[in-house]
Length: 121
Image (cartoon, rainbow, N blue to C red; front, side, top):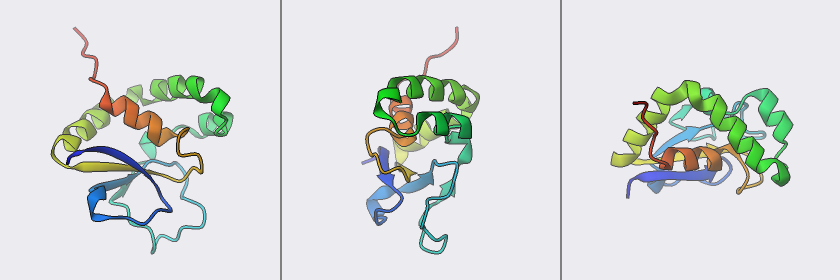
């Protein structure tokens, strides 16, 4: 079934992943490029280095991280629309490398992509 999923980069890929997009700004530690299975690596969808370092995967900063990350993604509106459209016809898996599976950019990005985009009038 089409839609948007998330998965750690260290989990084995599966056919049900569909299109696998790495959404980290830096390459996953310890994962060789030969062993990686990504259809693309989209650094533009990753949080800025400054935001990533500020967040540090601290759960108490999660809400503020999500707000700041959404703000950074405003320049990526066309890309977000394209991913939403893609997810209507195929599965899109956002791949991340963070240890925390609940507080990371892929979770925040999935939430954003699953919302109805706000149109300017």
